[in-house]
Amino acid sequence: MIYKSAEMLERLVSFDTTSHLSNLDLMQFIQDYLEHYNIQSKLIYNKDKSKANLHACIGNPDIAGVILSGHTDVVPVEGQDWSSDPFQLTQKDDKLFGRGTCDMKGFIAVVLAKLPEIIAAKKLMPVHFVFSYDEEIGCIGVRPMIEHIANDLVIKPAMCIIGEPTSMQVINGHKAVNRINCSVTGHECHSSLAPYAVNAVEYGAELVSHIRKIARRLEHEGPFNTDYDPPFTTLHVGVFHGGTAVNIVPNHAKIEVDMRSIPEQDIDKVISEIRDYAYKILEPRMKEKHPKTGFEFEQMVATPALSTPDDEKVVQLTQNITGENTTYKVSFATEAGLFQDSGISAVVCGPGNIEQAHKPDEFVAIEQLIKCERFIDGLLKNIAA
Image (tube, rainbow, N blue to C red; front, side):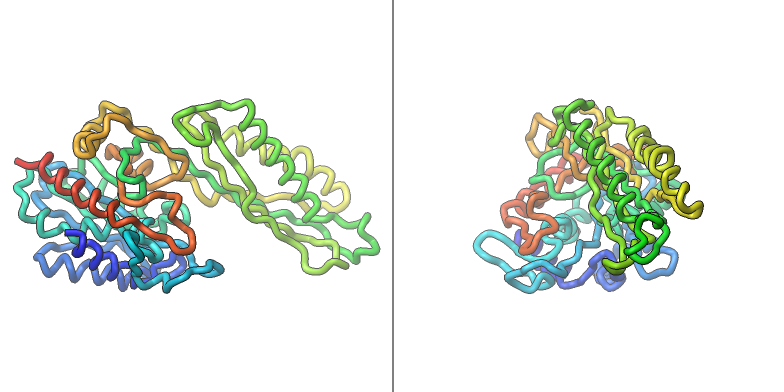
């Protein structure tokens, strides 16, 4: 069967669906493929109709079913040193290389390749295909899709399996992700008069230093949850820039902060601590020199954590299929928390290793695709009438 999955993966990889680009050509390909098997699908577009989610139901839609979910967007390849064309599937030994092979077109390829078996299986539960956009920039695209599932379907699916790369292990918990942007407004002047200016970069640096202190405190003082690696909430400054010339005191700086929090962490309290330091400690000193200076914060991403109890049906089902008695938790985020928040029980289980994702020469091992194929076979047996 692997040749069918690999053939499908080759087609999927050939579509450059980097998040800043449209995914409509890929979605049209999937729609045409489904229509070949007389399966109708619905596209749920973004506001300008440049991107879309896809939903299809195989089986009786009046029965609560299982969702097989994956995102179609991939991260950029610019600046990465690839040894082959990232948008052309390349096999070397037992690995398939290309952007998205691991994260996460490999799972979608297996699901689509298995469509004839899914149709032919005598199922008690219907199988829903849910393919989204813009997961890589904050799980943005799937949100209108989840609204469609929650509000427009007669019967909401009972469970969801998100095929992010987990080496086919069952993941029932992951950290939440929050990202905030901070704009620092200073007051510029010639560098010879620097003491009379408000240096946006320097005040931004003081905030960055404070964020680092918070990160170190959380690392050493917790709270902790040893199910995760690392076992504490992390935060770091991923972007910090400002200024235009060395002889001009900069009047603007931008800071972007990424936070990955364990369930025990009150992340709102951490965000408030960052804001309070800016507004109560730094900003008054800035305004003493110029009243129109200061800080502005914007919440860019708020993706909820996943925490599915071990006794949930979706956990027991996936464990039964994989033969695993253990569940795992991961530090990367997925769309699973959003499905859970909408009342659909979710786990993460898919082919590939997250360590291969987002890198040059991204790959998925053929053995992982074979495991995923067997997983779909096991799923069909477990939901059979």
